[in-house]
Picture 1 (spheres, rainbow, N blue to C red):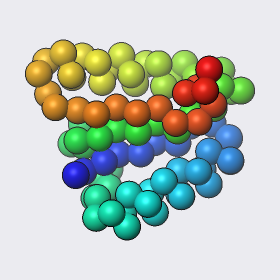
Picture 2: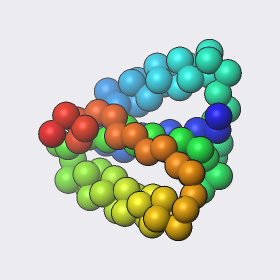
Picture 3: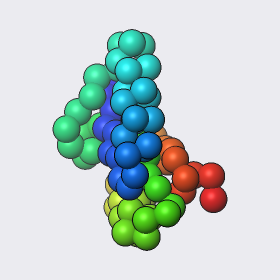
Picture 4: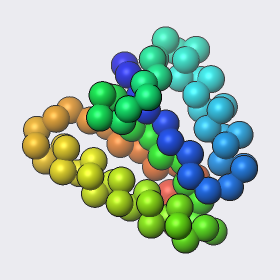
Length: 84
């Protein structure tokens, strides 16, 4: 599986993303640089920083359009925004 992982917000999210990436790679998954070529898109974002929160909702809207066009895509949100 090809995945894309984007980190938005605080430094704690950066560490969490590195840990998640290590687990995904250990399972044999391949990271890609462009979310449009990924089978799985993950966003690790912070609710403390409003800009990061707005950015992830914008990305989710674009991903929803991609899924609506019949593309196979798994989308996940990690971090504070997912907890809200």
